[in-house]
Image (cartoon, rainbow, N blue to C red; front, side):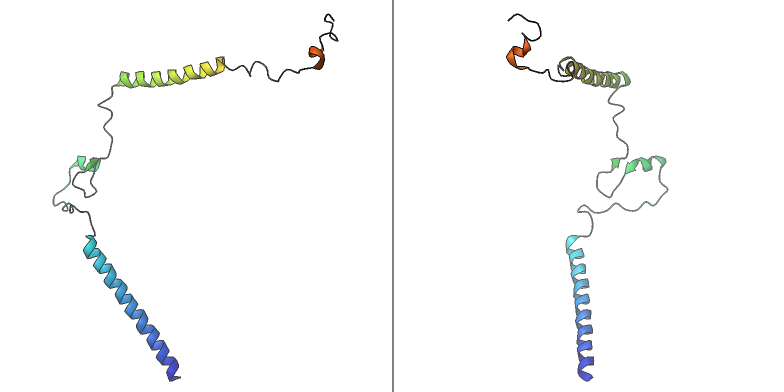
Amino acid sequence: MAANSLSVARTFTGLIRRAGAQSQLAAASRARGGAGLPVGTVPAPTAELDESEELIWDDGSPCPEPCLDSVAPMVGKYEGLAMLSAGLGFFAFVGFLAKWNDKASTIPWTPREYPYDNLRVELGGEP
């Protein structure tokens, strides 16, 4: 019975040592890895935020980005309409060419080829 309790005590001691080693490893990797961005963090705000602050994506990097893309000021309304029309017109033109060049749709089945010169004499042709 004493040998059994001794083996249980050794097992628990080993578990405790392994848990301690894992926590030391985790602490060392956090300290060596920095546990954050390489440029540091932005300090927490001390005053009330402005209304426009919700439009900026600040992930703690030194260069916060706007949440919304600013494409609208670069492309005008009519210029965007012209680009859309040109793109749709191009695809309509390619579709028209494919339909115009499709010979298989005019004959839904392949024509049969009969022997003896396609049965020319049998169908009333000259011998």
